[in-house]
Image 1 (tube, rainbow, N blue to C red):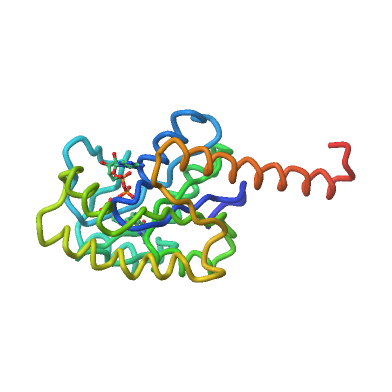
Image 2 (tube, rainbow, N blue to C red):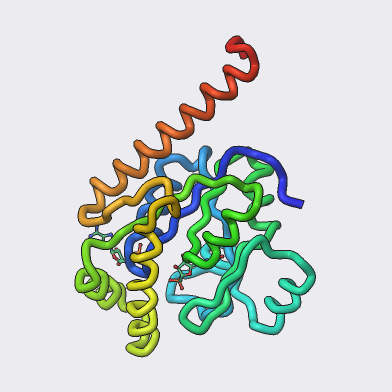
Length: 206
Ligand code: ADP
Ligand code: 5GP
């Protein structure tokens, strides 16, 4: 069972749009306030990625079995690999009292929206497909075929991201400092609103 706790934060956006970079900065600045939901994936680790920190790296067989046991909140196939958020991943953050942050693609967002997690939904938008391709190539983490798949998916994600009602905010990541300030501002406004609502519910003196 997923525990109750503060409203989670979801970051979605095409591969290479800057989600991990923004999250890393947020987690570094506010280590006591936010905690990362460590997803499962069947893709291979990239250099520097640690099991249990960046992802729980697993196999298709193990992940399919865990899904069948009902252990996941949402799952998706992306660029030929399985990804998913386990109930445990969200509970692990929530039991620390931190705000749980999920970095997930759009099929996962659609599933999460049907749960009672009620997250704040942020879409990270690249300046253009051309710039996205430049950044992905410069990151140098994907083979040519995987890169092509990611760019093809990016076009669909950009359409989804811009559809009214799908996200609470679209952050254009043309400049990292500017994008990060917008994210910070959005979070602080929405968290402050929640604190005010909670105070109102408690009669204003708690
Ligand atoms: P994602 O997690 O969305 O796949 P990353 O955070 O890994 O994307 O970013 C993709 C690449 O683009 C990384 O190499 C990162 O350093 C770089 N990057 C992120 N934001 C910017 C930016 N505003 N300008 C230039 N490069 C950026
Ligand atoms: P990457 O392979 O670059 O780490 O991630 C590829 C895509 O998978 C990204 O869009 C990322 O947001 C998404 N992703 C990572 N973890 C999950 C997850 O648990 N669920 C879903 N639906 N997508 C995920």
